[in-house]
Image (cartoon, rainbow, N blue to C red; front, side, top):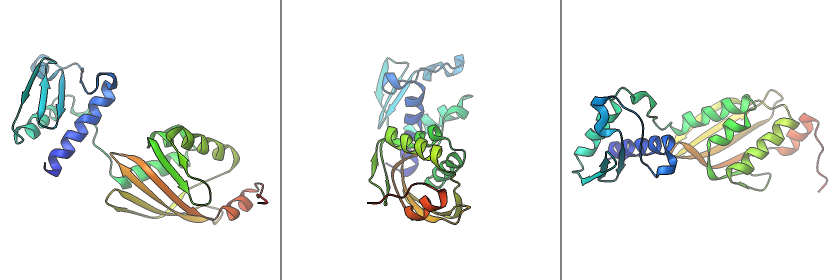
Amino acid sequence: MSIRRKKLLLNLFHFIQKVNPLNNGIFAGKHPPEKREISHCLVFENFVCAGGFTQRRLPDSFIPSYIYSLIQSPYHSIIPSLNSPKQVLQQWVNAFNRYDANALADLYHEDAINHQVNTDPLVGRAAIQAMFEQEFAQAEMVCIVENMFEDGDWAIMEWKDPKGLRGCGFFQIIEGKIRFQRGYWDRLSFLRQQGLPIPTH
């Protein structure tokens, strides 16, 4: 399967799941009469279900053009494209600087891992969101990006804050969301700068 075909299938699958996640991929959007033949559509590998009733196996070469015709419909603007790892990381920085724990949590997979090396790893979106909510309530934090890179599924960032703290973070982005994150920074310096209690153990 070509990279282009994989991307088309993946983008359509995510769109379908977003529009109607309870039907396991059945798209039930409304289209004008000329688009009625794809008012219900399921695409998985080589199979296409149209109208919710018809299922047939199509040649590999046909499926990209079939999806392309859907993307070119009047509703193409609501079919999302997956953001690159660097774009996802920029969204993360923007949400962090807004103190928006909900938006940050939405950028993670449900079973994501966030490991700041000076603490124990957090597992799961809910735990990660709770951590952000707690930290935003305790400290004044701003992420100033000094360098940002992308390598395959990874986005890497070197950052600083207005108080002089510096660090770096590594984000593994799978299907447009963060699967794994690891951060390196000096927690003792952070606590001192923020006037927070310093652990004695």
